[in-house]
Amino acid sequence: MFYFFFESRKAKTDPVVIWLTGGPGCGSELAMFYENGPFKLTNNLSLIWNDHGWDKVSNIMFVDQPTGTGFRYSSSDQDIRHDEDGVSNDLYNFLQAFFKAHPDYIKNDFYITGESYAGHYIPAFAARVNHGNKNKEGIHINLKGIGIGNGLTNPGIQYQAYTDYALANNVISESDYNQINQNLPACEQAIKECGTTGTDICQYAYIFCQHIFEDIILLTDNINYYDIRKKCEGNLCYDFSNVETFLGKSSVKAALGVPSDIDFVSCSDVVYRSMLNDWMRNLEVDIPSLLEDKIQLLVYAGEHDLICNWLGNSRWVHAMSWSGQKDFVSASNVSFIVDGKEAGILKNHGPLTFIKVHNAGHMVPMDQPRAALKMLELWTTGKLVQPKKVVDAPL
Image (cartoon, rainbow, N blue to C red; front, side, top):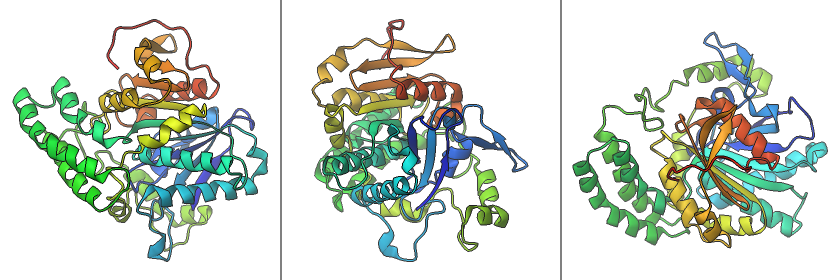
Protein backbone atom coordinates (compact mmCIF):
# COMPACT_ATOMS: atom_id res chain seq x y z
CA MET A 1 0.00 0.00 0.00
CA PHE A 2 1.44 3.39 -0.99
CA TYR A 3 0.32 6.54 0.80
CA PHE A 4 1.26 10.06 1.85
CA PHE A 5 0.53 11.34 5.35
CA PHE A 6 0.72 15.00 6.35
CA GLU A 7 0.37 16.28 9.89
CA SER A 8 -2.03 19.13 10.45
CA ARG A 9 -0.46 22.57 10.20
CA LYS A 10 -2.64 23.60 13.15
CA ALA A 11 -2.75 20.84 15.78
CA LYS A 12 -1.83 17.18 16.01
CA THR A 13 -5.17 16.60 17.74
CA ASP A 14 -7.08 17.61 14.59
CA PRO A 15 -9.09 14.84 12.91
CA VAL A 16 -7.39 12.23 10.78
CA VAL A 17 -8.84 12.40 7.26
CA ILE A 18 -8.25 9.82 4.54
CA TRP A 19 -8.78 10.85 0.91
CA LEU A 20 -9.65 8.32 -1.79
CA THR A 21 -9.46 9.30 -5.45
CA GLY A 22 -11.82 7.54 -7.86
CA GLY A 23 -11.41 6.38 -11.42
CA PRO A 24 -11.48 3.53 -10.63
CA GLY A 25 -7.70 3.40 -10.83
CA CYS A 26 -6.67 7.07 -10.54
CA GLY A 27 -3.82 7.93 -8.21
CA SER A 28 -4.36 9.94 -5.05
CA GLU A 29 -1.55 12.21 -6.19
CA LEU A 30 -3.95 13.91 -8.61
CA ALA A 31 -5.96 15.24 -5.68
CA MET A 32 -2.86 15.83 -3.59
CA PHE A 33 -1.23 18.18 -6.11
CA TYR A 34 -4.25 19.65 -7.91
CA GLU A 35 -6.91 19.80 -5.22
CA ASN A 36 -6.54 19.63 -1.45
CA GLY A 37 -3.01 18.52 -0.62
CA PRO A 38 -0.49 20.72 1.22
CA PHE A 39 1.48 21.52 -1.94
CA LYS A 40 0.82 22.52 -5.51
CA LEU A 41 3.10 21.90 -8.48
CA THR A 42 4.33 24.86 -10.49
CA ASN A 43 5.08 24.65 -14.21
CA ASN A 44 8.79 24.34 -13.44
CA LEU A 45 7.96 21.33 -11.22
CA SER A 46 8.75 22.99 -7.93
CA LEU A 47 6.47 22.77 -4.90
CA ILE A 48 4.64 25.69 -3.32
CA TRP A 49 2.32 25.71 -0.32
CA ASN A 50 -1.38 25.29 -1.00
CA ASP A 51 -3.11 28.00 1.02
CA HIS A 52 -6.25 25.87 1.11
CA GLY A 53 -4.79 22.43 1.68
CA TRP A 54 -6.91 20.24 3.92
CA ASP A 55 -3.89 19.73 6.17
CA LYS A 56 -4.67 23.20 7.53
CA VAL A 57 -7.48 21.68 9.60
CA SER A 58 -6.74 17.93 9.59
CA ASN A 59 -4.06 15.28 9.59
CA ILE A 60 -4.60 14.00 6.08
CA MET A 61 -3.51 10.90 4.18
CA PHE A 62 -3.73 10.22 0.45
CA VAL A 63 -3.84 6.52 -0.41
CA ASP A 64 -3.22 4.85 -3.77
CA GLN A 65 -5.83 2.13 -4.10
CA PRO A 66 -6.87 -0.41 -5.35
CA THR A 67 -3.69 -2.39 -6.17
CA GLY A 68 -2.22 -1.16 -9.45
CA THR A 69 -3.20 2.46 -8.81
CA GLY A 70 -0.61 5.24 -8.68
CA PHE A 71 2.54 3.89 -7.04
CA ARG A 72 0.79 0.89 -5.47
CA TYR A 73 1.99 -2.31 -7.10
CA SER A 74 2.19 -6.06 -6.61
CA SER A 75 4.07 -8.90 -8.27
CA SER A 76 0.94 -11.05 -8.22
CA ASP A 77 -2.19 -10.61 -10.33
CA GLN A 78 -4.10 -12.15 -7.43
CA ASP A 79 -3.77 -8.82 -5.64
CA ILE A 80 -5.82 -7.01 -8.30
CA ARG A 81 -9.23 -6.22 -6.83
CA HIS A 82 -12.57 -6.67 -8.58
CA ASP A 83 -15.11 -5.63 -5.96
CA GLU A 84 -15.66 -3.54 -2.86
CA ASP A 85 -15.06 -6.44 -0.48
CA GLY A 86 -11.46 -6.70 -1.66
CA VAL A 87 -10.96 -2.93 -1.70
CA SER A 88 -12.46 -2.29 1.74
CA ASN A 89 -10.63 -5.20 3.38
CA ASP A 90 -7.32 -3.90 2.02
CA LEU A 91 -8.07 -0.41 3.31
CA TYR A 92 -9.17 -1.71 6.71
CA ASN A 93 -5.97 -3.72 7.04
CA PHE A 94 -4.00 -0.65 6.01
CA LEU A 95 -5.63 1.43 8.75
CA GLN A 96 -4.88 -1.22 11.35
CA ALA A 97 -1.21 -1.15 10.32
CA PHE A 98 -1.16 2.65 10.18
CA PHE A 99 -2.56 3.18 13.67
CA LYS A 100 -0.33 0.46 15.07
CA ALA A 101 2.68 2.33 13.66
CA HIS A 102 1.29 5.75 14.71
CA PRO A 103 -0.53 5.19 18.02
CA ASP A 104 -0.54 8.93 18.79
CA TYR A 105 -3.46 9.30 16.34
CA ILE A 106 -5.65 6.43 17.54
CA LYS A 107 -7.91 8.66 19.66
CA ASN A 108 -8.35 11.32 16.95
CA ASP A 109 -11.67 11.59 15.15
CA PHE A 110 -11.48 9.78 11.82
CA TYR A 111 -13.18 10.78 8.56
CA ILE A 112 -13.28 9.05 5.17
CA THR A 113 -13.46 11.38 2.17
CA GLY A 114 -13.02 11.24 -1.58
CA GLU A 115 -14.66 11.91 -4.91
CA SER A 116 -16.00 10.33 -8.10
CA TYR A 117 -15.74 6.51 -8.02
CA ALA A 118 -14.89 6.87 -4.34
CA GLY A 119 -18.68 7.12 -4.04
CA HIS A 120 -18.37 3.33 -4.24
CA TYR A 121 -15.25 2.92 -2.12
CA ILE A 122 -16.29 5.13 0.79
CA PRO A 123 -19.58 3.47 1.89
CA ALA A 124 -18.05 -0.02 1.63
CA PHE A 125 -14.90 1.03 3.49
CA ALA A 126 -16.90 2.81 6.20
CA ALA A 127 -19.13 -0.22 6.66
CA ARG A 128 -16.03 -2.40 6.99
CA VAL A 129 -14.56 -0.08 9.65
CA ASN A 130 -17.84 0.04 11.53
CA HIS A 131 -18.11 -3.76 11.42
CA GLY A 132 -14.54 -4.13 12.67
CA ASN A 133 -15.20 -1.73 15.53
CA LYS A 134 -18.37 -3.52 16.62
CA ASN A 135 -16.68 -6.90 16.52
CA LYS A 136 -13.51 -5.65 18.24
CA GLU A 137 -11.39 -7.06 15.43
CA GLY A 138 -8.39 -4.87 16.11
CA ILE A 139 -7.58 -1.27 16.95
CA HIS A 140 -10.79 0.73 17.39
CA ILE A 141 -10.98 3.38 14.68
CA ASN A 142 -12.80 6.49 15.83
CA LEU A 143 -14.98 6.81 12.71
CA LYS A 144 -17.07 9.98 12.86
CA GLY A 145 -18.09 10.66 9.29
CA ILE A 146 -17.84 10.04 5.57
CA GLY A 147 -17.74 12.69 2.86
CA ILE A 148 -18.50 11.95 -0.81
CA GLY A 149 -17.74 14.59 -3.43
CA ASN A 150 -19.36 14.31 -6.88
CA GLY A 151 -19.54 10.57 -6.36
CA LEU A 152 -21.03 7.58 -8.15
CA THR A 153 -22.95 5.81 -5.40
CA ASN A 154 -26.36 4.67 -6.66
CA PRO A 155 -26.09 4.19 -10.46
CA GLY A 156 -29.72 3.14 -10.80
CA ILE A 157 -30.81 6.65 -9.84
CA GLN A 158 -27.83 8.63 -11.09
CA TYR A 159 -27.85 7.32 -14.67
CA GLN A 160 -31.49 8.35 -14.98
CA ALA A 161 -30.47 11.91 -14.10
CA TYR A 162 -28.01 12.32 -16.99
CA THR A 163 -30.52 13.46 -19.59
CA ASP A 164 -32.46 15.61 -17.11
CA TYR A 165 -29.29 17.42 -16.08
CA ALA A 166 -28.09 17.77 -19.69
CA LEU A 167 -31.41 19.19 -20.85
CA ALA A 168 -31.70 21.61 -17.93
CA ASN A 169 -28.22 22.94 -18.69
CA ASN A 170 -28.75 23.21 -22.47
CA VAL A 171 -26.20 20.50 -23.20
CA ILE A 172 -28.75 18.65 -25.36
CA SER A 173 -32.02 19.58 -27.06
CA GLU A 174 -35.46 18.29 -26.14
CA SER A 175 -35.52 16.03 -29.20
CA ASP A 176 -32.11 14.63 -28.18
CA TYR A 177 -33.48 14.13 -24.70
CA ASN A 178 -36.43 12.09 -25.94
CA GLN A 179 -34.25 10.03 -28.25
CA ILE A 180 -31.60 9.16 -25.63
CA ASN A 181 -34.21 8.35 -23.00
CA GLN A 182 -35.34 5.41 -25.12
CA ASN A 183 -32.25 3.64 -23.72
CA LEU A 184 -33.38 4.09 -20.13
CA PRO A 185 -35.62 1.00 -19.81
CA ALA A 186 -32.80 -1.33 -20.89
CA CYS A 187 -30.43 0.41 -18.50
CA GLU A 188 -32.87 0.20 -15.59
CA GLN A 189 -33.60 -3.47 -16.19
CA ALA A 190 -29.91 -4.35 -16.42
CA ILE A 191 -29.17 -2.52 -13.17
CA LYS A 192 -31.96 -4.43 -11.43
CA GLU A 193 -30.47 -7.71 -12.63
CA CYS A 194 -27.04 -6.57 -11.47
CA GLY A 195 -28.44 -5.91 -8.00
CA THR A 196 -25.83 -5.43 -5.31
CA THR A 197 -23.83 -8.59 -5.97
CA GLY A 198 -21.43 -7.43 -8.68
CA THR A 199 -21.91 -10.50 -10.92
CA ASP A 200 -21.07 -10.65 -14.65
CA ILE A 201 -24.48 -9.24 -15.58
CA CYS A 202 -23.18 -5.97 -14.14
CA GLN A 203 -20.84 -5.60 -17.12
CA TYR A 204 -23.86 -5.73 -19.42
CA ALA A 205 -25.53 -3.11 -17.25
CA TYR A 206 -22.46 -0.94 -17.60
CA ILE A 207 -22.59 -1.27 -21.40
CA PHE A 208 -26.32 -0.51 -21.64
CA CYS A 209 -26.20 2.44 -19.28
CA GLN A 210 -22.94 3.95 -20.48
CA HIS A 211 -24.60 4.46 -23.87
CA ILE A 212 -26.76 7.14 -22.24
CA PHE A 213 -23.76 9.13 -21.09
CA GLU A 214 -21.81 8.55 -24.32
CA ASP A 215 -24.74 9.62 -26.51
CA ILE A 216 -24.89 12.91 -24.64
CA ILE A 217 -21.17 13.51 -25.12
CA LEU A 218 -21.35 12.71 -28.85
CA LEU A 219 -23.92 15.47 -29.27
CA THR A 220 -21.64 18.11 -27.79
CA ASP A 221 -18.74 20.09 -29.17
CA ASN A 222 -15.98 18.36 -27.17
CA ILE A 223 -17.53 19.32 -23.85
CA ASN A 224 -15.59 18.71 -20.65
CA TYR A 225 -17.92 16.27 -18.90
CA TYR A 226 -16.25 17.11 -15.57
CA ASP A 227 -17.09 20.80 -16.04
CA ILE A 228 -19.59 21.72 -18.74
CA ARG A 229 -18.27 25.30 -18.83
CA LYS A 230 -15.04 24.03 -20.44
CA LYS A 231 -13.70 22.03 -23.38
CA CYS A 232 -12.26 18.55 -22.91
CA GLU A 233 -8.49 18.43 -23.45
CA GLY A 234 -6.67 15.09 -23.31
CA ASN A 235 -7.74 11.69 -22.04
CA LEU A 236 -8.86 13.00 -18.65
CA CYS A 237 -10.16 16.36 -19.96
CA TYR A 238 -7.42 18.06 -17.88
CA ASP A 239 -3.67 18.32 -18.30
CA PHE A 240 -2.07 16.37 -15.46
CA SER A 241 1.25 15.96 -17.24
CA ASN A 242 3.17 17.96 -14.63
CA VAL A 243 2.47 15.46 -11.87
CA GLU A 244 3.36 12.55 -14.14
CA THR A 245 6.67 14.22 -15.06
CA PHE A 246 7.42 15.15 -11.45
CA LEU A 247 6.70 11.69 -10.06
CA GLY A 248 8.62 10.12 -12.91
CA LYS A 249 11.87 11.77 -11.85
CA SER A 250 14.34 9.29 -10.41
CA SER A 251 15.25 11.69 -7.59
CA VAL A 252 11.59 11.99 -6.54
CA LYS A 253 11.01 8.24 -6.62
CA ALA A 254 14.16 7.68 -4.60
CA ALA A 255 13.02 10.23 -2.00
CA LEU A 256 9.64 8.49 -1.77
CA GLY A 257 11.11 5.01 -1.54
CA VAL A 258 9.55 3.93 -4.84
CA PRO A 259 11.52 1.33 -6.86
CA SER A 260 13.09 2.82 -9.96
CA ASP A 261 11.24 0.39 -12.26
CA ILE A 262 7.78 1.40 -10.97
CA ASP A 263 6.17 4.11 -13.07
CA PHE A 264 3.42 6.42 -11.88
CA VAL A 265 0.30 6.36 -14.07
CA SER A 266 -2.41 8.95 -13.45
CA CYS A 267 -5.20 6.45 -14.14
CA SER A 268 -4.72 2.71 -14.66
CA ASP A 269 -6.63 0.94 -17.44
CA VAL A 270 -5.94 -2.39 -15.75
CA VAL A 271 -7.65 -1.32 -12.54
CA TYR A 272 -10.50 0.33 -14.46
CA ARG A 273 -11.25 -2.86 -16.39
CA SER A 274 -10.89 -5.08 -13.33
CA MET A 275 -13.67 -3.17 -11.55
CA LEU A 276 -16.28 -3.33 -14.35
CA ASN A 277 -18.41 -5.84 -12.43
CA ASP A 278 -18.47 -3.38 -9.54
CA TRP A 279 -19.44 -0.26 -11.50
CA MET A 280 -23.23 -0.58 -11.55
CA ARG A 281 -23.60 -1.85 -7.99
CA ASN A 282 -25.64 0.26 -5.60
CA LEU A 283 -23.36 1.20 -2.67
CA GLU A 284 -25.98 3.38 -1.03
CA VAL A 285 -27.23 0.23 0.69
CA ASP A 286 -24.31 0.41 3.12
CA ILE A 287 -25.13 3.92 4.27
CA PRO A 288 -28.42 3.82 6.26
CA SER A 289 -26.95 1.63 9.00
CA LEU A 290 -24.05 4.08 9.31
CA LEU A 291 -26.50 6.96 9.74
CA GLU A 292 -28.40 5.01 12.39
CA ASP A 293 -25.10 4.63 14.23
CA LYS A 294 -24.74 8.46 14.18
CA ILE A 295 -21.91 8.44 11.65
CA GLN A 296 -22.09 11.69 9.71
CA LEU A 297 -22.65 11.68 5.94
CA LEU A 298 -21.70 14.69 3.85
CA VAL A 299 -22.51 14.54 0.14
CA TYR A 300 -21.38 17.54 -1.88
CA ALA A 301 -21.35 18.19 -5.60
CA GLY A 302 -20.10 20.95 -7.88
CA GLU A 303 -23.02 22.24 -9.93
CA HIS A 304 -21.21 22.18 -13.32
CA ASP A 305 -20.18 18.51 -13.29
CA LEU A 306 -22.01 16.23 -15.74
CA ILE A 307 -20.51 12.80 -15.12
CA CYS A 308 -21.43 12.65 -11.40
CA ASN A 309 -23.81 15.58 -11.42
CA TRP A 310 -25.43 17.19 -8.42
CA LEU A 311 -28.94 16.30 -9.61
CA GLY A 312 -28.30 12.55 -9.57
CA ASN A 313 -26.53 12.81 -6.23
CA SER A 314 -29.37 14.83 -4.75
CA ARG A 315 -31.91 12.29 -5.97
CA TRP A 316 -30.25 9.26 -4.41
CA VAL A 317 -29.68 11.11 -1.15
CA HIS A 318 -33.35 12.09 -0.99
CA ALA A 319 -34.53 8.60 -2.01
CA MET A 320 -32.41 6.78 0.58
CA SER A 321 -34.54 5.00 3.17
CA TRP A 322 -33.50 5.64 6.78
CA SER A 323 -35.21 6.77 9.97
CA GLY A 324 -34.63 10.46 9.19
CA GLN A 325 -35.62 10.37 5.52
CA LYS A 326 -38.94 12.16 5.89
CA ASP A 327 -37.45 14.96 7.98
CA PHE A 328 -34.51 15.35 5.63
CA VAL A 329 -36.76 15.61 2.57
CA SER A 330 -38.92 18.26 4.25
CA ALA A 331 -35.96 20.27 5.61
CA SER A 332 -35.37 23.74 4.21
CA ASN A 333 -32.64 24.56 1.72
CA VAL A 334 -30.30 27.17 3.16
CA SER A 335 -27.32 29.14 1.95
CA PHE A 336 -23.85 27.72 2.54
CA ILE A 337 -21.94 30.87 3.43
CA VAL A 338 -18.18 31.30 3.02
CA ASP A 339 -16.52 34.66 3.68
CA GLY A 340 -19.90 36.36 3.78
CA LYS A 341 -21.00 35.07 0.36
CA GLU A 342 -23.21 32.21 -0.73
CA ALA A 343 -20.91 29.40 -1.89
CA GLY A 344 -23.66 26.82 -2.30
CA ILE A 345 -27.04 25.49 -1.24
CA LEU A 346 -27.22 23.20 1.80
CA LYS A 347 -29.78 20.84 3.27
CA ASN A 348 -29.39 18.96 6.56
CA HIS A 349 -31.18 16.74 8.99
CA GLY A 350 -29.39 14.90 11.79
CA PRO A 351 -26.24 13.20 10.52
CA LEU A 352 -27.01 13.82 6.82
CA THR A 353 -25.92 16.92 4.90
CA PHE A 354 -26.09 17.65 1.18
CA ILE A 355 -24.44 20.65 -0.49
CA LYS A 356 -24.63 21.84 -4.08
CA VAL A 357 -21.47 23.91 -4.54
CA HIS A 358 -21.63 26.97 -6.79
CA ASN A 359 -19.12 27.63 -9.59
CA ALA A 360 -17.48 24.20 -9.33
CA GLY A 361 -17.22 21.13 -11.48
CA HIS A 362 -16.28 17.55 -10.64
CA MET A 363 -13.29 18.54 -8.50
CA VAL A 364 -14.69 20.95 -5.93
CA PRO A 365 -11.44 21.44 -3.95
CA MET A 366 -9.70 22.47 -7.18
CA ASP A 367 -12.43 24.82 -8.42
CA GLN A 368 -13.51 26.25 -5.07
CA PRO A 369 -10.59 25.59 -2.69
CA ARG A 370 -11.61 28.13 -0.05
CA ALA A 371 -15.17 26.83 0.11
CA ALA A 372 -13.99 23.20 0.21
CA LEU A 373 -11.60 23.87 3.08
CA LYS A 374 -14.25 25.76 5.05
CA MET A 375 -16.72 22.94 4.40
CA LEU A 376 -14.30 20.38 5.83
CA GLU A 377 -13.46 22.54 8.84
CA LEU A 378 -17.10 23.22 9.73
CA TRP A 379 -18.18 19.63 9.11
CA THR A 380 -15.48 18.01 11.24
CA THR A 381 -16.11 20.45 14.10
CA GLY A 382 -19.90 20.07 14.06
CA LYS A 383 -20.46 23.65 12.91
CA LEU A 384 -21.49 23.13 9.30
CA VAL A 385 -25.18 23.35 10.09
CA GLN A 386 -26.18 26.67 11.59
CA PRO A 387 -29.02 29.17 11.01
CA LYS A 388 -28.64 30.57 7.51
CA LYS A 389 -30.79 32.28 4.95
CA VAL A 390 -33.51 29.96 3.64
CA VAL A 391 -33.45 29.89 -0.14
CA ASP A 392 -35.90 28.81 -2.80
CA ALA A 393 -33.55 26.71 -4.89
CA PRO A 394 -33.73 23.10 -6.10
CA LEU A 395 -31.76 20.37 -4.39
